[in-house]
Each structure stands twice: as C-alpha cells, then as structure tokens.
Image (cartoon, rainbow, N blue to C red; front, side, top):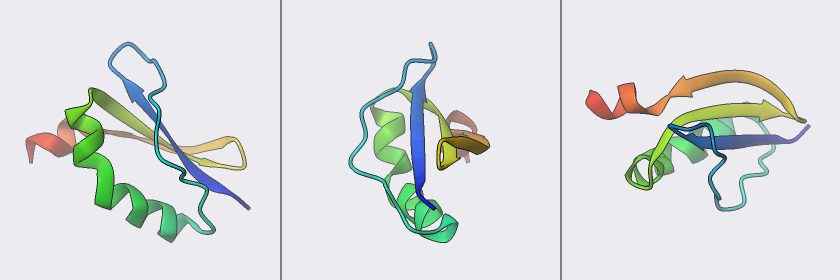
Length: 67
C-alpha cells in the first residue's frame, strides 16, 4: 500500500509537494503534521489522504491554522 497526500488550494488546484509516498497511514499523518503550516503559507486549504489512489479522508487546513 502507498499512502500519499494531495494538497489543494482554495480553487481546488493541486499544489506541488515534496515526495510523500509513505508506507503507513501513521507515517503519512506524521509527514503532514510536520509540514502543513508550510503548505498553508503557500496557499493550501485542503489536504486529502490517499491510499493507492483512493481518498481516505479530507482535512480543512484553514481551520487547523486558526487554532
């Protein structure tokens, strides 16, 4: 299984991200946890966790930035 993140801006455009092909959901969540603020600074609003091309869940990054 391959876990990746799809990072999107407010218009739904997919943003370029560093290589994020990870071996487990936990690794993927840790990877995003270390980088999400950088993505928000670059205009990201949504992160979608993907498992082998299937969306597992979507997360609103703007709401996280307000906390």
